[in-house]
Image 1 (tube, rainbow, N blue to C red):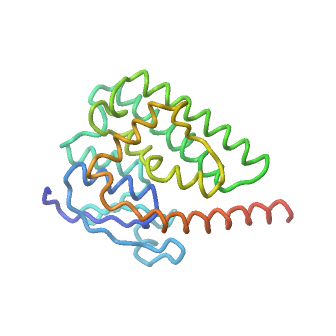
Image 2: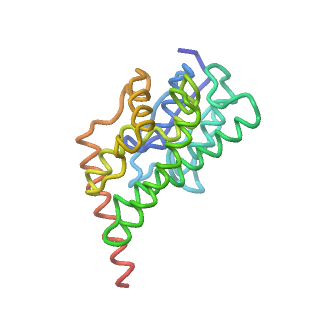
Image 3: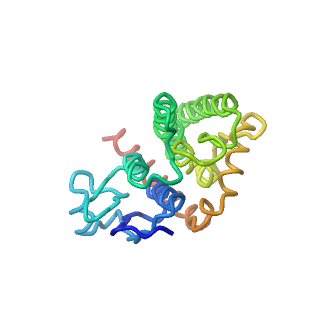
Length: 231
């Protein structure tokens, strides 16, 4: 591991956003101190380092805080040049940013909404998630590579990576089905390849603990939605 000057990461154990940053630092070989935060009882440190949103993750490098996971990933890639996450070619770099944005806003978000909703709203969210996965599948097939980043894990893979270990749990908690391996063979193979990487699979949260958390959280969100409808 590379010695660095004061790298700290504030995260929350089940946060896919904090996990992105952990993966990037590991792939770069950057040592860091991890600080676990309780996002439901925020510490003065978190409020100080991210006063605008008060959210994790926050990367602290040489005393300077950086927030928002995708912004942090780009910062890490610019500071530590080894094992680049983004392509060098400007066009390919723009395409990587496009698909990373798509992974966050269309793929991850629609799956989360499907898990936390009910009735017609759930049906719409599942439909949106499946449509997003169809576009992801097409892009993976077009590339014809092991990962979105080619033969090595890159920027898009890290942003979309939460799919690999959280999707099945979201489906189970929400009693939904989004990823059919016969319909999405490229994504299914990508998930297998991604999780087979030792640095990716290392230290992931326990499935039973994630299931309990997502079950509780989805019920809380569903209850909040019902309250807003009846208010």
